[in-house]
Amino acid sequence: MAPQKKHKILIVDDHPIFCLGMSELINTEEDLLVCGSVESIRKTGEAIDRLQPDLVVVDISLKDGNGIDLVQEIKKNYGLPMLVLSMYDESLYAERALMAGASGYIMKQEAIPLVVEAIRCVLKGDIYASSTVKEKVFKRITSQQNVDSRSPLDVLTNRELEVLRLIGEGFSTKEIADRLHLSIKTIGTYRENLKEKLQLKHFTGLVKFAVHWSNKILH
Image 1 (spheres, one colour):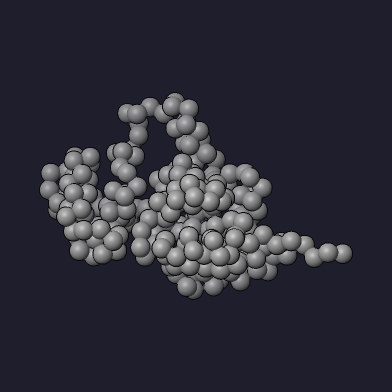
Image 2: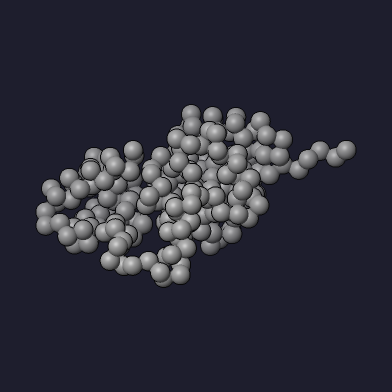
């Protein structure tokens, strides 16, 4: 009997211990194989070209940018199925991930018992997400969601949301600029946009908002 063909999985995550644990878990399955892992957006394209994975697992927070942007890039250039793993609560990021082109979203706190199920679901061409997230995405697609009922954060772009998160995690403007490979002036512009969209008058208010929100999405 011919050996069963294994589906190749590429992991994009900048936490080595998590990658190792996830790889060991996935590789125990007869039909799945982690073909490689990379820690940055910059290295992902080369890894996809070289390893030819069947599915990509993407973290939201990467050392050189936002996983949502990477999802859009992979969808556009490769059309591969993707599963997003994140430490952040699904209430905001899951919808953005699915709208960007991912086929599934799972929180890292749930990853160990559910990741194999999620991977198989996505490989079959199905969507893996909670019923609440699926309903939100369906309403957004069919334009049934009342604009007045949306969170103020829904009007932020993915990049603005990333800057807000980094502010909340205590990064300075220069550190954010270095991390995202942008100029300090550009980050300053994002800060002003955030204050305007969130209706905050001062940067101190923006910092307080960002810290409160960052703590909330982690729990």
